Length: 154
Figure 1: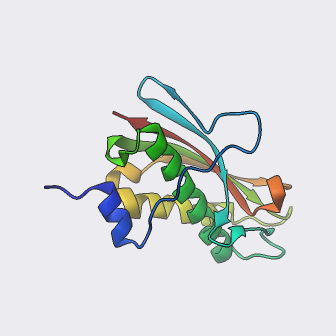
Figure 2 (figure 1 turned 45 degrees about the horizontal axis):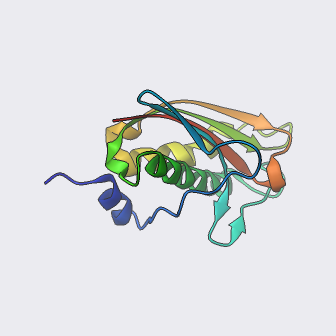
């Protein structure tokens, strides 16, 4: 029997949380055919929101850790979209990462690498994706990172 995505996550020490509920008047994901668009997931860890500003109160390594938490929430939403069966995931198509950063901070790609690297570690080739990494003057609740994603499922 081949290894499941859940087994790979467990090997990484990750258990997906319940999919976070939306904070306003939108849905957490929309499925169109075999494509799932997941709303932006903010950096939220076991102790609550991961708050900070890159280039000010956080460095790129701390930002990458925050981005990894966004990726975990993205996969939790995909699992919900798949009726609880993450192995219906075919691939990650694209991630768009927003980094709460100062005007002179230029390492947004290093921050979003925290999510990209996690997707590949957790999903193998199915985790390889197209990507954007951009700066934001601020993000909801003062979080460090927000990432949205597009996924293909079966």
